[in-house]
Length: 193
Image 1 (tube, helix red, strand yellow):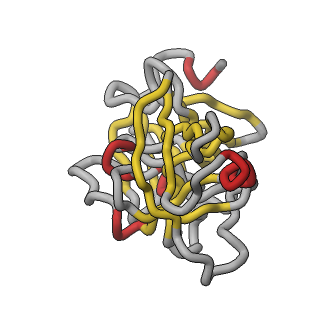
Image 2: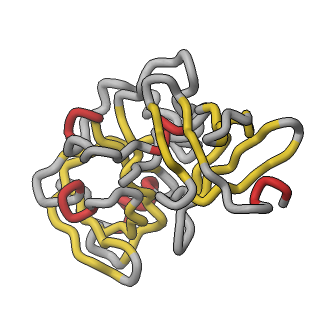
């Protein structure tokens, strides 16, 4: 499991961990009764967007809400819709009230997320990490993580080249979050692409 970081100000080596993580993106208002369409950006949207849960908004560029004293939004209800969720927040009862939310990210405090299982990481913990082969060859540093099927990809920049490394057990042999290091065993030719 990995969860996207709290916007473009991704945690980099030497920076402190984010206090909030992005868990969804509000695409647009839906209907006339205050629902919004949310693209979930978490592995457990049914828990994050459960009735009574509090979330906060981030700006469209992923930066935190400029008013830290702004009250959180409270989820009134949610239901699956297409590949996302329709979410209704308390006290936002019509389309006019929710239209300004379009394009905003939804965040939750780190401490509200379930603890990671053994071997799991958050995406922000990979950003800036050094990528090396099992033989010790430095490939570069993780610049971005892409959620793709069938496997997520690490975008690694090194020696003026960009490498896309599948984030699979077959290729990624070790992730050392504390040392900010990812050890890979790339298949033949992967680093020459």
